[in-house]
Image 1 (cartoon, rainbow over the protein chains, first blue to last red):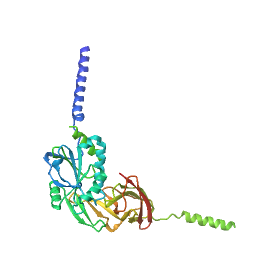
Image 2: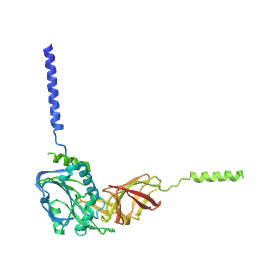
Image 3: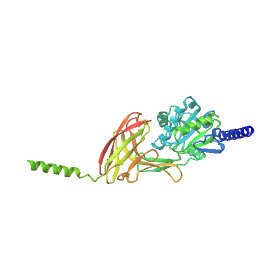
Image 4: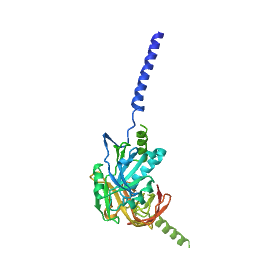
Amino acid sequence: MKRIFLFIISLAAGLGLTAALTFAATQWLRPPALHGLVMQPQQPAYNFTLMSHYGQTVSLSDFRGKWVMIYFGYIACPDVCPATLAELNKALLSLGKQSERVQVVMITVDPERDTKEQLAGFMPHFNKSFIGLTGTSEQIKEAATYYGIYFAKHQEDTALGYLVDHTATVMLIDPDGYLRVVYSFGTVAKDFADDLKYLMAR
Amino acid sequence: MKKIFLLTLLVTLAVSSCKPAGPKIMVDTAWGRQSPKTATAGAFYMFIRNAGLEEDKLIGAKSAACKTVELHESYQTPEGAMGMRRVTGDVIAIPPGATVELKVGGLHLMCIDKLQDFNSGAQIELTLRFEKSGDVPLTADIRE
């Protein structure tokens, strides 16, 4: 009788342990879902060379060793662009010291109006570390094409003159220069920060 | 004397019981994002509620802090990009009983050619113009 009892106990314990381990493997050890479109397979990101708002020539390869977040936007865009840049700033603030390993870059889709001087008055307002990049129309078009960014000027009866429609995604590039995640417009600071923390810890 | 008093009372009661059938506009949680003067434009967001019985229309806005204020809308283009346009006819309808939200990525007021920095914590005075309710003054908080 006692044996049967022990057998049942150990069987139950064994089953319980198996269940717990399975649960741990599938839940706790499972990588968290990232909050954007994860690129598979990973491809090296296009190595642009543009002019920074500091007046220096900058290439993507200059940022090797850092996580780079690229956004295509423009200064006269008062709704979508500041919203995205403000979320990226909040994400960096919540990362604390780790944010030193992240570089946020905005490439203008309005090079006609967004000179390096204009960008110098705009970018640091969101975060002192943010870098604005501009170039010739051809350079911008090339960079946008390689990153799959659509943009087009559109005339509108507004005091702003013209507006630029543009894909408002944020692209995350790893320290080796590979495009890893693409985030759609509306991604919030916490999601950016959680993904960065997870990816940087690996 | 008593008659005059009663008459006055009756007239007063009659007038006050006659509820105006028109719209009743209330604006709530107006805010804008902090941005430097160099950023030519800035958006304002808010809730506009019509507690009345008739539709009203937002037909414009102005502020001493902006050279121009337009009604704009962000939208998704067929290419999947984000676009922005001036609201058709410069009119945003506020139906009776409805609350229209001006929000990030949607409808918003566009302050063009800022005349000052919008610093976090500051308050910007705005005046909304409605077709029926006329001018409605409000204060927008500038946030990060």
